[in-house]
Length: 130
Image (cartoon, rainbow, N blue to C red; front, side):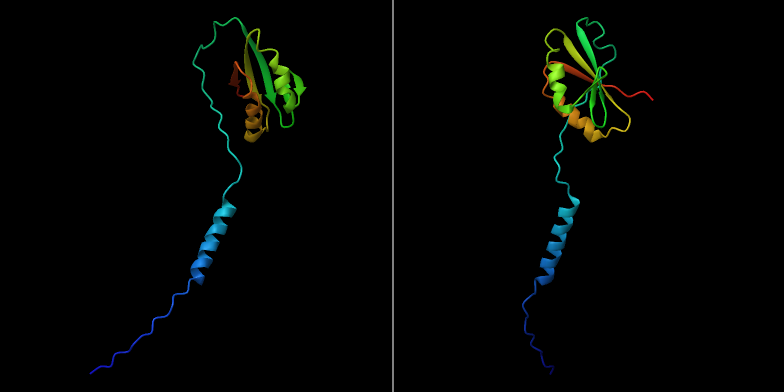
């Protein structure tokens, strides 16, 4: 006849579980980004679109790393809307946006976000020539 051992059940320790949860929380906090992302819709123009419009005013806007050139004149970011505000009433305004060499995508998004306040303006993104 074999004797049965009686086991006394111990309480489970959750200290290691808490450590694992803390490490996962720390990992996800350090790897996530806390910046806000905005979305700007880019639409490819159809071939020959707008060729017959005679009342179109085209302005060239060159985005540089520290300033913006509107038709060759340097303009601060805060003054872009003031420079372009009076020109939208008479004719349909089209802005040809040209990024200068070395300009980051975030810089372009910042300038395009400022231009979002303009009404009745067509924005065209032009690939810079090299």
